[in-house]
Image 1 (cartoon, rainbow, N blue to C red):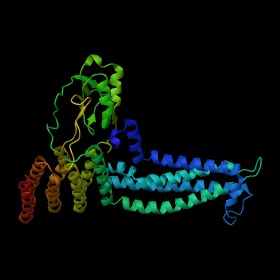
Image 2 (tube, one colour; image 1 turned 60 degrees about the horizontal axis):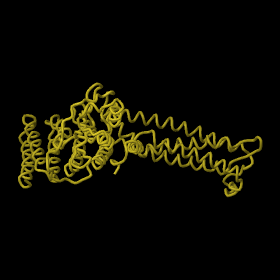
Image 3 (cartoon, rainbow, N blue to C red; image 1 turned 120 degrees about the horizontal axis):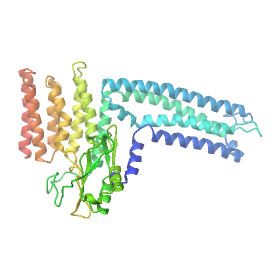
Image 4 (tube, helix red, strand yellow; image 1 turned 60 degrees about the vertical axis):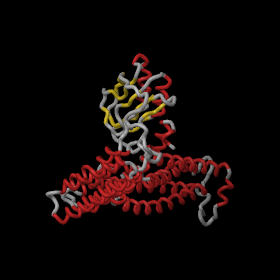
Length: 441
């Protein structure tokens, strides 16, 4: 659904889903606004404070009590935030060194962490916004209802802190990390490839009535292609009667000065139009999962490679990574290939965008693991089992052939590294994969 929205709205929704900026900021601003408005309403309508039982706030006529409570809550909350999140960053640093530096991106998308930070900062903003209402001059006023709200928020922060510590202790475990990355990758696949698999009338790289644009539009900022606004490009191409071809797919690095787009009819390419076309492609210093399925796969591969390295020697973690990679490839194999040709009107190709096919994603997922796990029987056997699982759900004969070829290479690479008994088990798994290929062809 989100892929049909304008780029600005998509960017906002993606930031709401990930990052420490948008969600905590919204929560803290909302609570600060509530604190200011509630204290103002309580001063405007003094009867609001009468609803609070006397036993909960006996010192109703002393503004200094309200000032002390609000300032104490605000000070203590910021102290806790500083200590807890300093420890959190230290834990993330250790986890990134042990697993992969790319997992920090996944941690920043954690909703529990974002909400916890938002509640803590929101409580601070609430107290600061309500503090000016508690005053002695020109007349004494104590916002008892607002202070009681601050006390409730302080209790909520204590409960949230306990839950947050429990959540972080679970979140830094490798199984939880890999599962979260796989879930986010599946979400990216569902957004980019919503339709189930069906046979194409023509190969993915070709289209009827397609032309080869030759007028280059040079890239101005070096970085990774993170998002391509296809609707904007199609609109610009239709308005100016052009045909466009993007030279780099999402996830690839684009140096400054290279042709990022190729267009037909160079005489129509004004500087303003070139700028608008470049603005439709988001380029940044790091990859994201907004449209980049391969990035999620590479994060899991990094964890698996570190696990099977001689310095770590943790095959159980590598097996968990292989299982999650098979989960992603199973979903990918059941979906229609990403759209590469965009038409407007129907039958007229306006924009062509390269996309990663199944073979390329399969190589990114398993090729390095196959190479470095050739001396590990457990990981190699699980790799063949994963290929069999993917072949079971794959609807394309070409996909199953690629899986069989990779399985054969995995067995061949293990020769000379495993004993005969292990090789016999490997050949048995390969026979199962080949039999499945024969039965489904």
